[in-house]
Length: 134
Image (cartoon, rainbow, N blue to C red):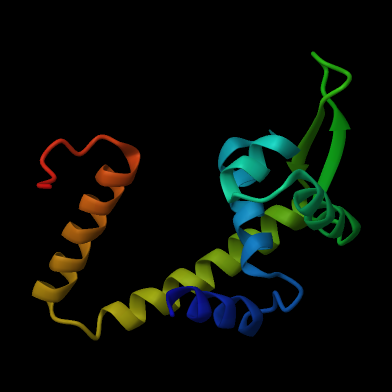
């Protein structure tokens, strides 16, 4: 349900051509500055052919560029264009504002419970939570 809301917000705020996997791809490269196709595919849990097709679309729209890696010519490095950074930032800001507005409808106690639960899940799935009971 949360991803459905995110997808709706992406489309509502001028990113109709951007799916959640597109958004997640741009977010990954935005945070890292550059990435390889296999790094992004691994992060998103997609196959290389699927990831390649997704990136082809982002490159065709002018959101990303492909460049030969300066250290390994067999490797392609993906980076965001100015348009890609702008589109990602505006879609992210609008989506976060909407989620913030929705979460503010909850009591502060409920928001604290959600925050605590999300921290527990992060620790559990990152392998850093040693206080999880079996």
